[in-house]
Amino acid sequence: MLSKSKIKYIRSLEQKKYRRQEGAFIAEGHKTVGDLLSQGFSPLLIVHTEEWHSPVTMPSDTEVILVSNEELRKASLLVHPQQVIAVFRTPKESNQSLNEYTTSDLILCLDGVQDPGNLGTIIRTADWFGIRHIVCSPLTVDAYSPKVVQATMGSISRVSIHYTDIPSFLRQLPTDIPVYGTFLDGENIYSHKLSDRGVIVMGNEGNGVSPEVSALITRRLFIPPYPADSPTAESLNVSIATAIVCSLFRSPKC
Image 1 (cartoon, rainbow, N blue to C red):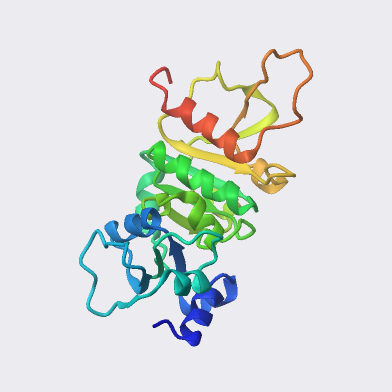
Image 2: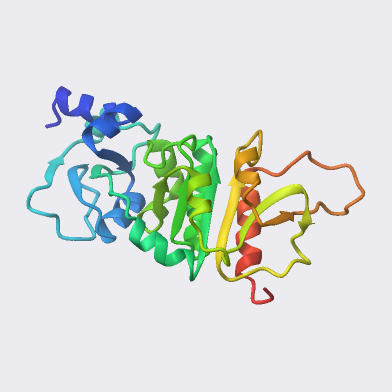
């Protein structure tokens, strides 16, 4: 049976202050929870119905509670709960692996992305294109909020998220590491020779890349509309723009 206090605890993790206080976050659904478990995330609590089966052997210190569909619904943040709710320890950020990647691969850098759906989609896109690290500004939405975690569809288990001051991070990069950003006055991305390593900066949904970060970008890119001289949307959604940019960087033509 799921107690009222346990339901209150699970639902409290919807708020950032309690996630920080507890050092934990929640995930729901067999796909997301299964991916996190398979990637070695540490579960503190598993609440599930009879339909759910764990893809791994559960650690001995994990509290596991079998519940009815009605009990699951009371604890869930979703309109339609999906067999399981899990509480995981929030992973600790490691700059060692990040520093290794800055000289050998691509890293995404998010300057104030605030919509949870956008961040979740960007994490999922990074996973698809083999980008293993995302650096976020402090103003970027919390990657472990329930809405972001759900939007990643399990990809958050394979992409490391780092929160830091972006200008400081960029200033510490080796001078030969290119820093890319998308701007309306940038060079046509389809005709620009793209590197197989470097940092790709994506900006805020409404304001784009901040002036301080913009000053540190060494290669300004532009995703042109088609046809170029026709009336079109004012801009692209940041998650869509990120998918286009990542696709071009991973293209064999680059």
